[in-house]
Length: 292
Ligand code: NGF
Image (tube, rainbow, N blue to C red; front, side, top):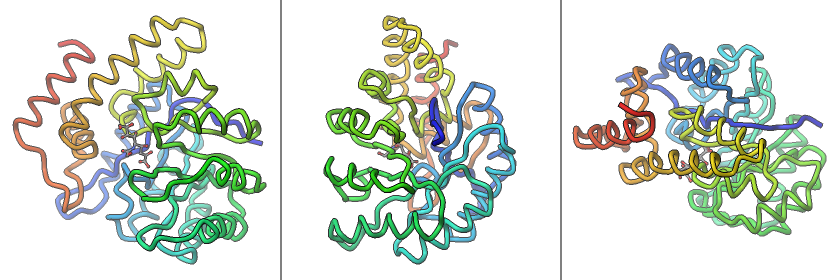
């Protein structure tokens, strides 16, 4: 079974003024982060504003990322959407684009039963034949997976991992220990170091698009047993994350990329453009992170 290890930016979706995908900026973000040592990309996720994109835009995005990456690292595509049938259609399209694996946010809005959610994942895995990574993001999806439920899902041959966008490190530790042949991804960048300490080997995160180097170095320091440096780097990253969260994480990430010289446009409305005072805060956070 494929081993997933390292830092995976949950990539933003650059758009132009008409809210169409800007593939040139996408390529710039990908090249910058590959240069910083990432292991792959998580595309069409929350950070990618996937639920604000039209279906054909999601496919365009996945196709563009696969073409730009061109086999240099992994591409994981979130294909989850409102119905099982639509998710399978998106999974098949992603498979044709050449992704390494697919991932799926649980079905939301209607409060589905556990039985319905489990079957949703089994149906996607069986119909697509693609390796599936579960997407545990209770804060946004409203679906709180229990540990036993995740273990049951992970027992399926087609389900190869889970992305834990939760602060529940007790659950993450239990999954790493119990499901040894599966990939457990950390999903909150601000707790990468604690997640590594419970045995996690890979992390998917939105802020890696702007500071992958910090987190690549953090993991290297952890692996070398240099805890002082690992803690220092987590603290550096968290300084930036505090500012991003204060402003609004996804618009703020695009704001930082703009300050770094890559104009990815705004987020899709109803997200609002950043204000001058937001840029001032981001400029300061960048100086604190990388120096003047
Ligand atoms: O933004 C959220 C919402 N989570 C992201 C990440 O898990 C999203 C996380 O990096 C993701 O993987 C995706 O795009 O699908 C946070 O932004 C970061 O830890 C700051 O809190 O929970």
